[in-house]
Image (cartoon, rainbow, N blue to C red; front, side, top):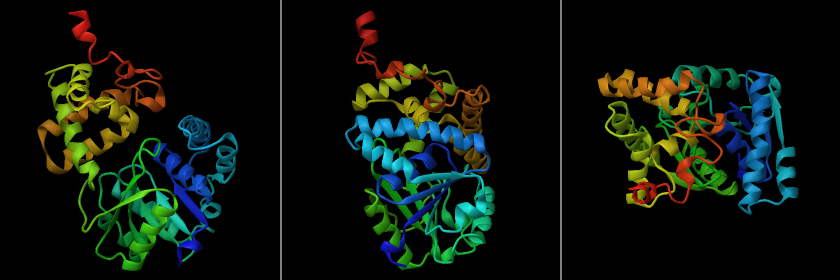
Length: 305
C-alpha cells in the first residue's frame, strides 16, 4: 500500500485524543470514521469537536469554512462493522489496558481490510505487549499523539515484528497530516516526551500526596523557574486526570512501589468525584479560566506579601 491509498481513517475510541486525532486527519482532507461503544460518548465527542474546531479557528489554523468541511468528513457510529469495513488506517485510543486493547484490535482485525495499518495511541504501553493479538503484527506499531491544539509532535514506535515498509508508511502519513514524527529506534516505555513528563508527574504527585506543598505552589514553582505557561497539575488537567490516574495506577501495580500506590490513591479521589480536568470543567483547577492562566499567578504571593 502507498501513502495515496490511505483515504479513510478509523478512530477507535472517541475520548479526548480520539477526537483530536480524528479532527487532525479530517483537517488534512481524509475521511474519518469514529467508533465508540456507546452513543452518548459519541454525542459528547460531537460537542467537543465543535469546541476543537473553534480552537483551531482562534489559532488561525482554520477558517469557518475549512473547519466546517473538516467536521463534515467525520462520521460517527457504534456499529463496528460499518466503522471498520472501509478503513485504510486505524488509530486506537481506548483506555490504557493491554488486554482491552488486544480485544479491540482482534475484533477489528476480522472487520478491517487486510491492507489496513493498525496503530495504537497508547501513552505508556509498548506495542509488543499486544502486537500478536492484533492479528496483523507486521502491520502494527505505536503512533502516539500529544495535544494537537498546541503541538505537532508524534511518536512512532515499531515493535520487533513491524515491517520496515509499514514504519516508513506511518512516517509518511504523519507528515501528510501535518505532524512532526519522532522515530524511536527501539521500544521504550513512555516513548520520548512522555518518559520525561511522567517523571515530572510522579514528582509532583509525590509532593502533593505527602502534603509537602499545595498543588498551586507546586505548579507555581515549575512555572516560575521554567517560565512555562502551566505546571504539572495544569498539564494533568489538560490530559485528563482519569488518563493520568490509569497510567499511575497501572505502574503502581507493576512495580509494587508504595509511593506510586499512594500517588494513585491521591489521583483516584478526583476520578471518583468526576473531576477529570479541563474536559469536565473541574479538576485540580476550575475551567474555563483556571487560576494558573492569570498573568499574575506566579507573582501573586509576592504582591500579597
